[in-house]
Image 1 (cartoon, rainbow, N blue to C red):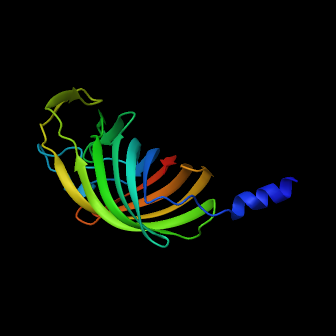
Image 2 (image 1 turned 60 degrees about the horizontal axis):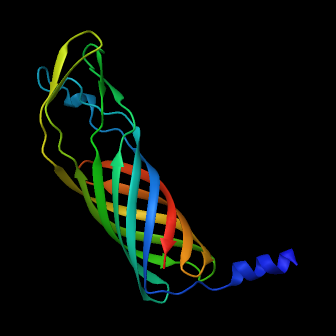
Length: 202
């Protein structure tokens, strides 16, 4: 009895719907930003922000176009859970720094690789990254020097994005999804990787 039930579950076609909404959460790994060569005495003592992880939450609106092709609008907000340590390359002094929050919005074409309950998919597209503004703040280094972080406005940047994911249909109108996303920011020559999961309503 069990084997036929499993076979029936895996082979059943998806519950077809033109539009869907996904609620997602994940972890975003952000590669190292800046270089030691950007050091400037009296201007930029801590030029490198090391690799760190942000928590991300978001939603996606998906429209079925034709066949296995979908169009998805995706939006996320990310925040670092803790401070990172920045190092002055000239004297190895250190300071604790809270990476700035950011949001990302993107539009991608998605291709479902099967029409079954276990449905892998791929997607490619692009979008915009919005780094949140920050107020002026003052802190002290490990050696006791005062450092002022100047007020910064919101910054924007464009990125290309690719996705590999798996959608698991539970019953009509609901599916679980898990996916990995790769972001490349050509202007900064920087990248991010996000592992996310959530539920999708049809």
